[in-house]
Image: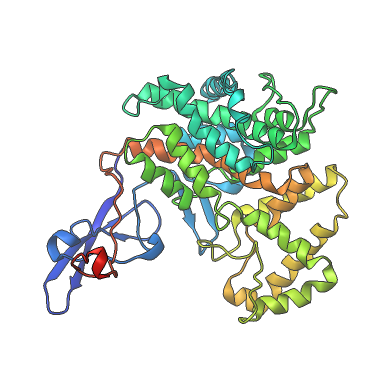
Length: 435
């Protein structure tokens, strides 16, 4: 990875009763400057304290940039709205992995490689039978992704660039097959194998919803919506699951294990489960008439109720993905005949009120992508317990791109956060008969 961070000056840290330390200040291509504290402990014997790492850059990256105040999301410099409207998921995948948009020949080669890696090892299907019939699809995906390293030994050597490439293509290709099988297993239907003449999103929809007893017709509007959903979720900077992938990878773990770690982290309700929570909230509200009641509850500090799908850890403006997701939701509801869906009407009215209410404007509680994605996926036929699986499927390419960047970064070290210890100081052992 070419190092592009530039030194712009120094920061002077004055420690009361101690020394003055000069720390270099660096700048990226866009975004805030950063203070390099790499030598702080060596020079002062002190650490920094930053719970959640909200003010700490853990790495240098050239993949994704977010400006939360402006509501900007860039993949390799390209605005997300341009990519979602004009590109497709496999082209975006190539962009994230390689840094530039492919030409016609490169895209054809990449698409062919992904297409011909979609099949799973024939023995792999028996792996699914080890799960209970009522296992959560996310539990199945988490286990299945980790199990890939037991089947594909020829692409686990992290030091071999060719093996890294093969592993990357395999995971992007096989994740839809694994996700679809997790869904089919959870509802007791037979697995549907991938079909090479279909696009990435078409193939996934067919594997999820086709049955052997009848022909499955792929709706182009739904296929486009699925592709757009994948694109919108492909990467999102150093979030919890991406940081987990990088941390696991810093130890030299094989790529399949690293992505499985990302899947496990994404499963947390505070991360990948937000769209499911937003949908549950709309069901709880129940009707447009009850929206004022819930708005009032959301403003009450003593009421535990929270409006799900509003606000974001990073975005302090309208999430750029939410605008695209809203339009996609309209398209899906139209083609599925669910335009009069009462849940969607609640969502539209809730958004309208929130965007014009001084409380939400002051708190910068704008609708995020999760607000609409749950409704859209539900209209497409997916149950709520598949929402996070679809998130993991889309985010796999971002995890891989981040992992590849991390592996090739010469400044990379094994992750080792420090702590502020507040437990007991030194204590002598007390024998059992004296306690």
